[in-house]
Length: 460
Image (cartoon, rainbow, N blue to C red; front, side, top):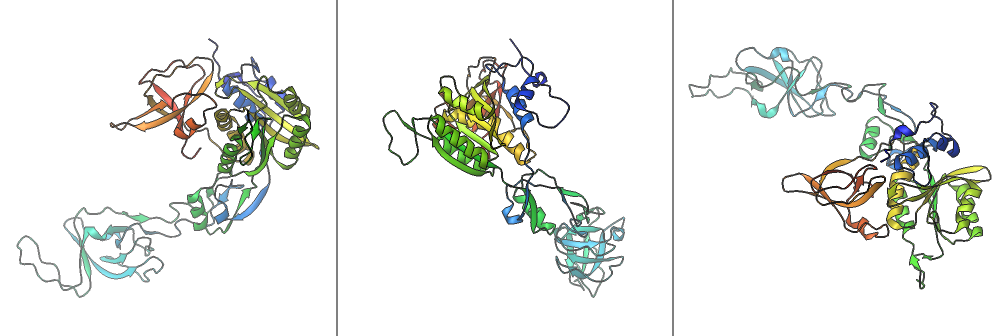
């Protein structure tokens, strides 16, 4: 059995993207009729160029946008030493080595209203969470760990409790060992220091990032402009929603799943509708897409048996490779560039079957589009779980099966396929909550074997 790995793809040391033909020439044992998934992914990644266009947006408009520069903190966060608890602040040197410690309470520090004045030995202040620590104080004890008195306490009649000293001001007592020196104090710059990188270029901004930007005083943030992606479906049998469904025709679902997937990535979307299997119509659609978009995605027209003029048109307008991938579903895939008036657009020709479109998008187009956006994307996270069913698998291809992940009574996770895995069964994608990933060399899976899954949550 032939074993495939990324080691068979060795690109030049230069990090600059290359032409498709040059990238293909770097792949040992290249076979467009049996290309492993990892090889296709490597070729695509090497041919992609990130866009370089920056715009400033208000932070409330920056959610899910790609950060265009490193954000440098102009301040310390927190800006000053402050309390992590509601309690009492004092200097640790005031703690006695044996027995309880008694401290006079001489004031209060609130968040936004600091205590003014010195705090000496044997003294403490009442302090609230987030309130500034007065100079010289290094320790906070939570309020529930002290005994607080308003002054002039009544003398206890219990022989087991020693009398407290008579005082005219409020005071607290701290039991021996109740707190350690330096406890519950947040240091200035503990979270982020002035001049440090707060957020790195290429980050896709999430809700917590917006809060961090606001905490640093940024009202606007530089982001990459949105990636423009044009897409359309090909096929004389396709009808758009709302049209009459003639005999032998089907409604086009692929444009709607593609729309949703592109929307999730934050792309600027150009929907060119359904294009007939006609050379003139296809040429118009491809040229319009290339002129107005950074990337083009089509569904249908790339498999064996499709109209020859579809493939000829793609090749005529650019540099396109047609692959039969060692994967299921989604074996046929086209990748390259389409040109219009000297402006190239990256092109993905996905299969026509609904599930194959989604699988091909997630495992080929998604990473490429994120890279074009300038995003520092990571591989989709894999989770290892136990298989609850027998899964038949032939070596020599990567399989992506729709799965249902459940938590067992013992807390362990297990997965089972949704059932029939035909690439036209779109309903199975709505029933599934994960994708079972069966590697190129993997064979049959027995009940209890470990398999890898990719969760749909946040993806689909």
